[in-house]
Every structure is written in C-alpha cells, then in structure tokens.
Length: 108
Image 1 (cartoon, rainbow, N blue to C red):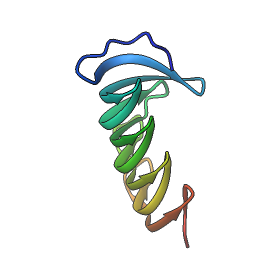
Image 2 (cartoon, helix red, strand yellow; image 1 turned 60 degrees about the vertical axis):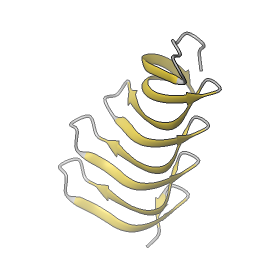
Image 3 (cartoon, one colour; image 1 turned 120 degrees about the vertical axis):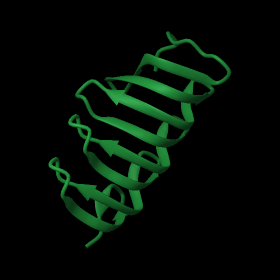
C-alpha cells in the first residue's frame, strides 16, 4: 500500500492504494494506514466492495458488486474471504447460491 494518500481523522477519500498489484480507490475509515471500519473499495476492473474492514481486508458484513452495479455477493467475510452465511448472484442479478461459505467457497 502506498503512503500517497491524505488522511483526515482516520479517513481516506477516493485515493489510489496499491495492494497485491491491484489499483484500488478507497473511501472510508482507516487505522494505521489500512482500511479499517466501514468503507468502499473501487477496483480498476469496475467492481467495488462496500462494508466492514479489519486490518486492510473485508471482514464482517459486506457486499461485492459487479461493474454493472448488480450485487455479486452479500454476506459475511472473514480475513478477505467469503465465510459464514451469504448469497451470490449471477451478473444479471438472479440468485446463484444462498447458504454457508467456507474459505471463499459455497458449502454444498
């Protein structure tokens, strides 16, 4: 993550962060230079995530959206992976899976 962002009372707004080679614009709460608390991340490919963060990763309740603004996944996240109860959707918005997730994958 670069240090080229403005911090104001623990928030950064729509500035580009670098993490794992991905360019991300982030708007939300920060702690020690990382997303932490509530925030939104906008990815270069058009997807975005909004929800809770812990130490730079999605953690808690959150939603990941396709670039067409339809929800891709909504539910629980643990350390950046889908974990616990959640729903995934196809790009057209129809439900693909509803139930438990483990290590980023649906439990069937």
